[in-house]
Image (tube, rainbow, N blue to C red; front, top):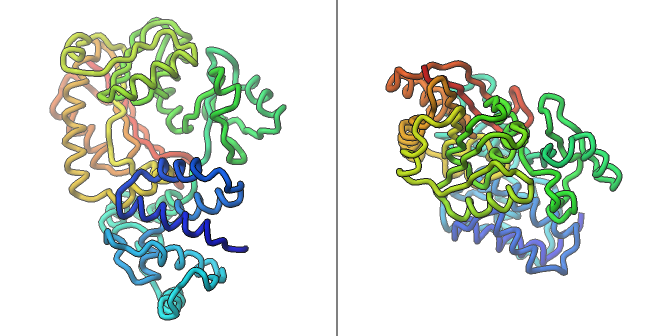
Length: 399
């Protein structure tokens, strides 16, 4: 494989923005590609995949180049060199790699490394994973380092999964339906579909299969009130509307106004007429007290179950973050659970794989709130019982 100077410089620049200046990984890549339309498909693939791979395996490539992976001054060009040499690619002279740096990397490739280094996790995160999952942790840690799949959900307010499969298939877009998810599909080859007419017409949404299974776990019914308390841009709210056949009421809350505005646009495109999206505050929580037949709390969390999509988050997960986030989760649970109606259902969800945010959080809530009982809990664990995102969900009933 031939290596081009412009592509390598782009990789180094993006890595510098992300690691030195803490810019968002996905948005930074998207901006670079948008501003350099002269790059072809192969160039774009090399740049995007190289950046994602180096961020995923940051600790390992830092180890090969004998750098501190947590240093804000880490040499991003050496990280790229380590990746290229580990793939047995020849580095051209214009790369200006010093001979001693080349020899260091080549020597380090033959040196033994711990599992935490090879799989590229912090010692703290790796130990937490071992404590929680035992022998299954290595399979889980390996799966989290793989590229995530592109998943779609047919919008049954406008079409069916079978019809959508045909529409896309007739255009050579190979999509496979997922058997254990009613409306879910997976793209067999990654491609950009945000400009596709079927998407613009609201025939499908981008939504991970595990996220779709969360909504099905909630068992929403037509002509009921569902409150989606941490709705974000509303993927689950739109899915609720489909299952409820646009009958009833879906109240979607979020603290971020920009996400609520985006949710309203998406609901309009999808034809989800029963979605009412609002920026949440204490008065709204009080207004909907004891009103929700189903109250979903998709709580803010470490995101440890979705680091395939956001590999940069892997390096921010530590004891301090977990302490802070579990406190926030506790406050949200205590506040938003007041909106559950008598005999109503509370569903607590995270996209985390860490017990502190999941079953331990639910156990602590039940100890504080005798008016609820646990009906069911479920964990979707990548590499163990799912090929998709990692989620935890617990269904509780007000009694």
